[in-house]
Structures are given as structure tokens and as C-alpha cells.
Image (cartoon, rainbow, N blue to C red; front, side, top):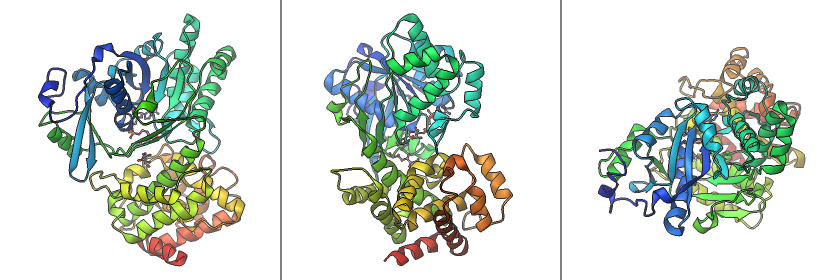
Length: 494
Ligand code: NAI
Ligand code: CS2
């Protein structure tokens, strides 16, 4: 049996199901990126709003690149899917009913996606398209004109493939038809994600038509958001568990996540927004301090554990948490090296760090270090390098951040501490492989990887203190392996 409107009643008593009239919802948000995270985060907030507060904000879900199966599954099951919160062996589920349309840019065609985005009711286009989806240069937050998707969209603006290209084409048509603009809300793990979305959309629009760019500048807002919920990629085992929660019913679009969730949103919308504050989101004037805190404390320690953990043979984050030295290193990284760089006020950062470690210990999650390690060239700048810049300017020490960067360098070297080959998933994978192939293991490898200006900018490779700290950490990893290196750095700090 598969999840659908017909089979919904069979679930009553087992999991929460929509209590509202789904056909009353209007498609007021088009979401680009129906991946794991969105299903367990923004859609759940909308579902609670519709259930408890009579909200009529419904979604059109879109995948532009990849994720054909999730869109197909949604369509097959009357646009319903389930979300399970997992804590060790205690799983609880709900069926989300706020999706009113589902489209794929390739299988349904980009025209269908743009048609959905140009409906008069659409007030928000939101995104969870990963760091890659913004087609930007992380060290400068500007558009990457050499990105193949951008090159395509510059040549064929009416048949765009990139997220910024699709947004611009939809806005062009809205302007032509005299329809109001929408807000573009990024929900990706990028610092000042609204600012990045603004930069790439405006840069591409200017290239196409300065008058359109001007209209966008004056009519579209790009609110930033801080989003948090750990949602690992689904596996056959977690789909099987969801099916168990659903009493044996299959749900290929189902998703499992941790119980915790947080959402801080810059309150800057041009055509209205759902009353997210009624279901626990914080609407604020400036998201930056929250984003910075989350990206450096949570994502920074996640990446540290991912690289050092993967090299040492730890497949999952909760396995890293069984190694006392890794726990102490993650705590010290957060409290000693990330917290002092933040602009956050009014938050107990020691308690925040403790709460993150408790979340990492969740044995239900099975969050792969490999998953977090992917796309490092787009993650390192905001997770580690920005903080290192603060330490360099202040003359303060950053041994764990240096170890984290060196851990990434060892990781992209492609061989773990047991001599096993690593499958590197990164948009710059070809370039990384070339740099690795053409440099000798050791100091030359560090020097070679530092030539990636997209990642390190021009300032860090030119800073002798930065280079020597990272090179020393790299040598330690090379000679002792990750487990011993973590233990030694922690001992030296005691
Ligand atoms: P996922 O792999 O399940 O989904 C990725 C989504 O991005 C898919 O919908 C795919 O169609 C889209 N996509 C990928 N490359 C694209 C491109 N070049 N252009 C347009 N769309 C593209 O990943 P997941 O877990 O949903 O994460 C997505 C993003 O959400 C993350 O990169 C992060 O920024 C943010 N996030 C994820 C959290 C998590 O725990 N999974 C938590 C907080 C934020
Ligand atoms: C992780 C994040 O995959 C990664 O890089 O660090 O997706 C992390 O799980 C989320 O940001 C938690 O909110």
C-alpha cells in the first residue's frame, strides 16, 4: 500500500495527518529544491500553520536539477508525504499536506516551472538548492560567470537552467504582465544568503537587461534566513523505518530528521508572508548574528568532525561522539575558536555548544561524515576561513581551525588513514584532483591547494602565519593520522 488521499484514513492514530481542507490552500510559495531539508523544515512550519492557525499558504514544489524521483513520488501520492522525527529508537511521524503542485524542470519542462512562478498569487519563491545552486564564488559572494549553468542562461535566457536564471525569467514575465513581484527567500547554509541571492540575480539580470535589473532592485526583496534542523540523506534503511512508522505503507518521498528545529527570518517581504511566528519561527530585522553563530558553531564543528572523522574511519557523526578527544576538540573549536569571532549577543554560547554536542549524539540520525564532507570548496569559507581571518587580525591562536582546514586538504588528497580511496564529491572535484596529482604529498600539497582563490581568497595564501599553521597541522595529520593528531592538539591545549 502507498501513501495517498485514499489511504490516509488508515494512518489515523499512528501518525498525525492533515486536519485542514487541503483544497482551500492557495499556491503562494514556489519552492526550488524539494530535497531532504525543505521537506523536514519549511514545509513542516507551513503544515503546522495550516493545521493550527487556518493559514492558506500552500506550496508548489520544484526540482530543477536532480530529484526526479521525489517529484514523481509526490505526484503519485496526491502530493502527500511523511516526516518522521527520530531519537534513538523512538520515531514519531506526521503527514504533510501543504503541497498543492509538484514540477520538475526537466521532466515537466522549464516553461511549466516558470508558468507556476508567474501565477498572480505567488508571493514568495524560496530556495534550498545547496551552495552549488547559487553559482557564486564563495570568497567574493559574486556570480561565477564561468559556471556552466550561467554560461547557458546567458546564451538562452528564455530557457534557463540555473536557479537565478529561472527567477529572472519569471520576474521578467511578471513585470511584462503587470503582476506584482515576489520575494526571493534563500534557506541555504550560506552567510547572508539573501545578500548572495540578491547578488547573483542582479548580476545576471544586469547582463540581460539593465531596465529589468532596475525593476528587480526596486520591487523584489531578498530576505536572509538562518535555518537549522539536521536532516541526513535518506537511505533504504531509513525509508524502511518510515514505512514501519506508517504501519507498512510505502512513502518514497518520506523524510526522517532530528526533533530540533529553528528558523530565524529577516522580516522583509514585498507581497506578504505566512505568520511563521505563530509556529516558532523568529522574525527579526537582522539575521546575520544568528547565521554567523549557526554557520561557525554548528556547521564549522560539523565539517571539522566530518573531515577528521572520515579520515579516522568514523562513518557517522554519532560515532565521532564516542571518541572523547573528538568531543573535546569539537567543544573547544566552538567555544575557544568560533564563539569569540561572533557578533551574537544575548545567547549563552557555552550552552549552545553543549546543545549541539547533544544533538550530534543522537544515535537515530546516522548522519554520514561523507555527506557533510561534500562540497568543501563551497563550505570552508563560511565555516572556518572567516573565523581564521578574525584570529589573524587579532593575533589570537586557532589550532583547531588550522587542523580542520588541514583535515579538508588531507581529505581531498583522496586517501584515508587506512589507505582506502575517498570518493570526493565537490563542484571543483576535477580541479582538486589535478592539484593533488601534480603536487607531492606534504608541504607542496598544501601550497598547491592554497592556489584555489575561489576558496581561500588572495589574502590567506599570502599570510605566512596562516600558511605555516595549516602546513604544521597537515604534517601532523600526515605523520600521525587524524585520531592521534586530534588527541595531540587537544593535549597541547590543556
Ligand atoms: P538534498 O541533496 O536532499 O537536496 C538538494 C536539492 O538541491 C535538490 O532539491 C536538488 O534538486 C537541488 N539542487 C542541487 N543542485 C542544484 C543546482 N545546481 N541548481 C538548482 N537546484 C539544485 O540536500 P538537502 O539535505 O535538502 O540540503 C539542501 C541544502 O539545504 C543544503 O545544501 C543546505 O544549504 C540546506 N540545509 C540542509 C540541512 C540538512 O540537514 N540537510 C539543514 C540546514 C540547511
Ligand atoms: C551539514 C548541514 O551537510 C552539511 O554540511 O553541516 O547540512 C547541517 O546538518 C545543517 O546545517 C543543520 O541545520
